[in-house]
Image 1: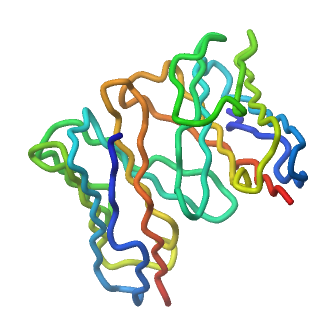
Image 2 (image 1 turned 90 degrees about the horizontal axis):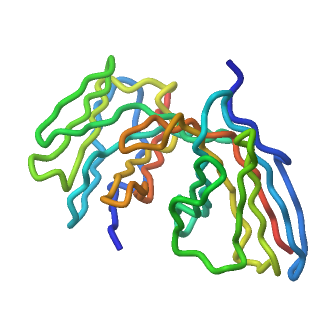
Image 3 (image 1 turned 180 degrees about the vertical axis):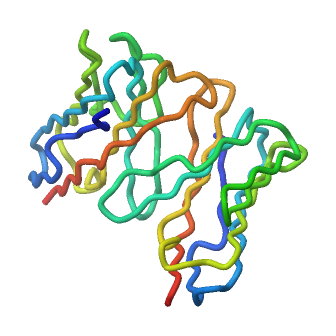
Length: 114
Length: 110
C-alpha cells in the first residue's frame, strides 16, 4: 500500500507570494490533517479535513487555508507569504481520525520564504 | 492552550547506554502518543497509551503513561545508533486535536 505523498517536496517563494501544497492520503483514508513544523515552535496543528469538511482548525491566521476533494486528496494554501512561514509542512492521513487513530505522515514539503 | 513539555531537548549518548525522555503537562489528555522522526521524513507512530498507569513495551523501548494522564516517559535500554532521531510526544485533547511536545533530539554514537 502506497504511503502518504506530498508535492512538491521543496519550494522556494518570496514574501507576498502565495503557495499551494498538495497531499495524497493512503488509499481508503478519509481524514487528512496538516501540520507546520519549525525549529522554534515545533509541530503545530493547522487543520483537519474529513469527507471534504474541515473538522478542526488550529490557531493560525486566515492566510492559511485548505480543502479536501472527493477523492480525499487535500491541498493547503498560504497567501501573502511571510518570512516566518518558512517551515516543513506535514500532512497526515488516517482512516477516520478518531481519538487514538493512527496517523500516517508524509515526508513533508519544505517551504522557504525569501 | 494545552502544552506538552519534553525533556531533555537534546541527548547525546554512547551505544549501549540507557536513557529516559520525559513528556509533561499540566493538562489531562485522553490518550498520548510517541513518534520518532528521522531527517527528511515525517514522524512515525511508535505507541499510543490510553489508560493512566499503562506501561507498554516495544522491544528495547518502554513507554509509561502517568496515573493522572498528564505525563509520560519513554525509556530506551541499551541504545543503538539506529535509535538516533527526533522523539515526539503528542496528546489528544477533548477536541480530538493532537498537541505535540517540542521534541527530544537523540544521538547515539557507536
